[in-house]
Length: 566
Image (tube, rainbow, N blue to C red; front, side, top):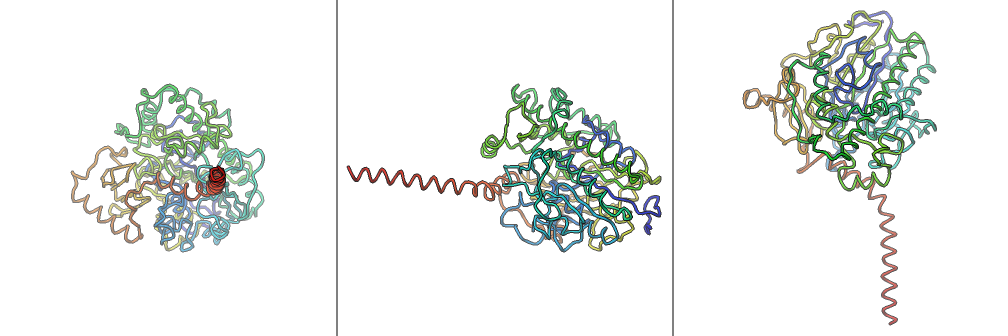
């Protein structure tokens, strides 16, 4: 029995389904204004509440740590990711790059409350038995410990990893021959749900690889979007803004910027346009393929009479990915060597497809920025909470008040009738589900965030933000993200006292969270490359270089011997 004041609290505790998309921009969901076909996610939006001012971290693992624990990513051990952490920070408190055992997970709390707990798909919070999902509260788990992998084969993203680290219940696992990531992740979850004790409620954490690089989808899904993006990213960005306003998730007449990293579409060579629009077609096809699997899971729950009393949470882990592996020499050479990079193969098996900064800015439209940035396009993502059988949930409503990923765990624990952990810093979002758009924080309550030197302090309607190069100028700026969600009007000069006070608030937060300063000249994209070189490329090259050196030595020795004989 629920003992807390959840909306429409029932005698039977609800099942919980958390659906996490990877690298989806704010308007990638149809219900948030986009053109991509997502009818099943849209149906959840119609049955529940869309959060239009919901924030996560700028990259995947820190978001997932906060989602799992209800505390900041630094307290959860993910002050940075393995892929982007500078060597000087590794192992420092809050920078363990795995989920810390200092905090309890949502799965641990729910299992103690009598729930069955299952996870399928991306984990990215540890790779040893004690840090994999079954070491952190999940009864069963088929998990990928890395940021991404191939979607058709048992193969890693070869630019970052030596192998795809899939495990089941903490042990190395094999993928089926007909593997496609979104379909398999749902297949496995359905098997877990049907194989468990039906007398207990369940917690299902479903973590898709879509739309992380490499972008890959079935041919029919890609073909559905053939020609859809011929007008380019500037036109798409404008259309997404209009769609978001029409759907009620953005204010009418909102302004938006054109980022320096978004070039003029008309100025691109025809071959470049063909490559870019083909990549976006693959991106959209991958999203639609994922949405179909969401629908299949929902249909199964309906068929087994578990749909009405299930709470559904859908969110993306961060904004759209702008990184392009073909944009710099070493990753480009690696990609061409390991993948089929012909334009006509984009999104198909054996390819490594990415949309780049131009279309990433459109996917996150009408916001500024994208993944890795602390701008709204990197941190504000689509989020939906639905509880179909609960009449107190305002069906089809939009909640415009500020909300954060640390709020999800306490919300779900409240619905489950379980007390939140004392260390949780999030707030239950239950008060926002009845149709009001007000947030759950007071006007004077500050919330900080930092990742890779990009930093934020939210307070009321205001956002203090700093982005390091290449994403920004390294200076603080101040925006009203209710009136100006596109971050077009810097208020720092107009409100100097507020600006100064919020910078002091951020310093206090950073000191409490033990945030480390970034090394001089740090750049997250460059650090990814440096870490990949140190951890992957050089180990691959050392044997080759050793043989090359030995061969060179033999040749030099032979030449010297021949000269001596002469």
